[in-house]
Amino acid sequence: RRRHLYVIGQTGTGKSYLLRNLIKRDIDSGAGVGIIDPHGDLVEAILGLVPRSRLKDVILFDPADTQWPIGLNLLEATTPTEKDFAIQEVIAIFQKLFLAEHLGPIFEHSMRNAMLTLMADEASPGTLVDIPRIFTDPTFVRQLLTKVTDPLVRDYWEKEMLKMTEQYKSEMLGYLISKVGRFVENSMMRNIIGQNRSSIDFNDIINNGKILLVNLSKGRLGELNSALLGLIITAKLQMAAFRRAEEKNEEARRDFYLYMDEFQNFATDSIAITLSEARKYRLNLILANQFIAQLTEKIRDSIFGNVGSIVSFRIGPDDAKFLVKQFEPVFNESDLINIDNRHAYAKLLINGATTTPFNFVTETVKEGSLDEAEKLRELNRQRYARPRAEIEEMINKRFRPQ
Image (cartoon, rainbow, N blue to C red; front, top):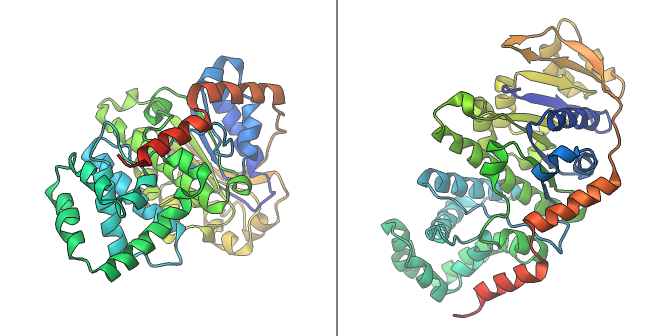
């Protein structure tokens, strides 16, 4: 699976059964596992299946648990390469979330300078919540500039901003702040993305084989909130994987299996880089979705150019025309369209060689313990979360006039 696994199938055909079994086996074998789940059912099922020997390895990120928010800061970067990647990802995230609108070069330029300013103080980096403030509070900008050494960034605030007419500045800032503001003004999101330090150590998760369970149920969070948090976590995991380049011995890098259901919601074009290069970083992707049209052309081409193994549950005629090339001559378009629920076709890459396509049926899934799941949830709160009142007081203190 270092060459990744792609699972496709219409809703209700059995993808979740397969993923649950694969995840359970990875956990039981002691592997590092991450799950990004936009529905919540998969994560909830796995919670009750974690063996007692691995309870301390589990990190549960559940934003809907609003009384115990876990911090998540994408602007937490140390090297110039990481800072550049974080900035590119934030811009790509907003381009993806507001696809119908043209954000344009001014948005990118302003956001880039704002984020570079907020990241200048590595001991106490700013957050996405600070972006609206940086454009409206001159005192706040002056405080931040004491840490900024990049002359181009200083010029943006000290020269470029001063040359803007008030009308132009008002239009540009109103547009920019409205995009970020819809997350900042939501108390649940603010308490997560407004913390200076992430509560979760993503380097530790990947390097030491932890179990990261991310419940991004769109029904409880809202589609935009779910997508933003998933995109941030995906970016943080990619940053942690790329940092492994510092480990010269490739064989010393531990395999980490990242499962992403409905992954098109959480993938920017950087996932294409991960698909092509992640093998050397041992970040092994298991990507699932319902149909190919959900993918951008770049991501689609990267999947079918780099993924070693493919599993197809029942799909529609358009996808069958495209995918039949992967399964011919053993199976035809009619086979791909008419297969029963919980049955699938597979073509696997094993030891560098492609197998003859075959069909299989998913195993019955064991039900987890609700009591064990609740114990794990409480343990997780104590280890990684902080009380809501404490977080809100911390954020409010940062925003009080000095």
